[in-house]
Image 1 (cartoon, rainbow, N blue to C red):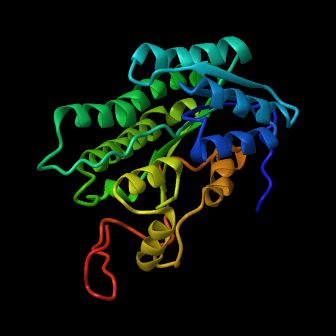
Image 2: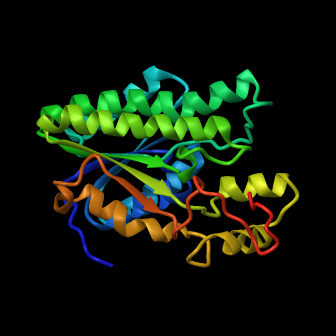
Image 3: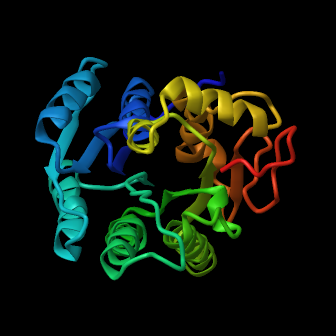
Amino acid sequence: MASYDLSGKVIVISGGTKGVGRLIAAEYAKAGARVVIGGRDEAAAKKAIEEIESFGTEGLFVKTDLLKAADCRNLFDEAYKKFGKIDGFFNYAGVTPVSPLDTCDEETFDLVMDVNFRAAFFCCQQAIKYMREGGGGSIVLTGSPHAWGGEKDRAAYACSKGVLMTLMEHIAKNYGEDKIRCNYLALGWTPTDGEVALRVSQGSSEEELRREAAKVIPIGRMNEKTDYVGILLYLMSDDAFMMSGSTLMTTGGWWIGTSVQNKNNATIK
C-alpha cells in the first residue's frame, strides 16, 4: 500500500465510531492527521479517540445527532475551535433499512433521507465554510452502487445515494475555485456491523451472507473494511489535488445497476 503523509491535516469523520469510519480514523491518525469524530455512541467514541491518540496525534469527539442540522454544523464548529482549521471531511454515516418503493412508509423514508442526505448536506455546508477560509480541502461522500437504480428492497436508500452523487458533482463544479475537492466513493458489499445485523434479523448468518455475495461479485469475495484504506488515504492527501468530481467504484466489479444472477438464473439480492 502506498504511504501518504497527512501530517498537520485536520480531518472530520461523520460516523467514525464504527465500521469503515472507525478504521479509517485510525489510519488517518497513523498518517499524522488530527481526527475529529462525530456520532452518538460516546463509549465507542472514547475507544476510538484513545486509539487515535496512541499514534501520537490528537483526536476529538463531538457528540452529534445527525438528524439535527444544528448538530451537523456544530461538529465542524467544534473541530475548528479546537484545531483552527479543517482540511478534510469523510461523510461515512448512513442507514440502510429495507425500503421497497411500494411499501416504504413515511417514517423510514424520512430517516433514510435525513441521515444519508440531509445530514451530509449540512455537514458539507459547514465544511466548505472552514475549508474556504483555510485555502481548500477534500470532501469524500460515501456512495453505493445502489445509486444506479438499486435493488428492489432498497428504494429509499438508492435514492439517498443517488442524490449524494449530485451533491458531489455540485461541490466539485462550484467550489473548485476555492481549492475544495469532492469525490464520491461507492463502497461495495461489505460485512459491516449494520449489514450483518440486518441479515441476521432476516434469518441469515454472516457466513451465509459471505457465500451469497461471493456468487455475484465478479472478483469472488465481499469487500473488507481494509479494502478502502488506500483510496481514502489518497483522497485526503495532497497527491489527490487534481482528483475532484470523480465517482470511484470499489466494488470488486459488482454493480447493482445491472441484473446479476446465480447459476440457477435466480436474481441474488
